[in-house]
Length: 90
Image (cartoon, rainbow, N blue to C red; front, side, top):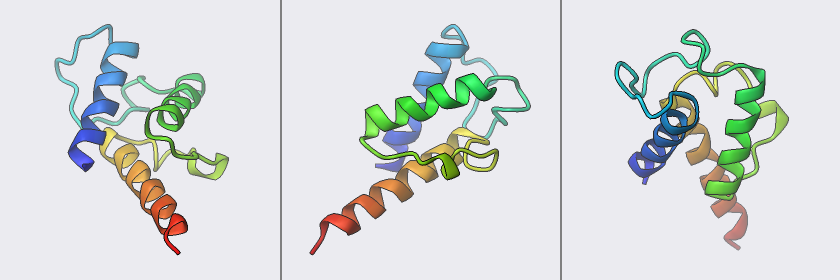
């Protein structure tokens, strides 16, 4: 499941902000340092996560650590999905 989430996030970033060119871009690339994410694109990515994975990304979740790499973003989504499932379980 996590690999599918990570793959979808990577695909979205490559298609949206890298013009489809994934050369040199991997799941551990620092998204802020490489210039992929700034304040606008971070909010756009958070919106994508909300809509695609049906999770609620709260303002406190939007920080440099959670949005550092594709892997950390995927970890955030996994945490949100686990919390959502736990809340739904009686």
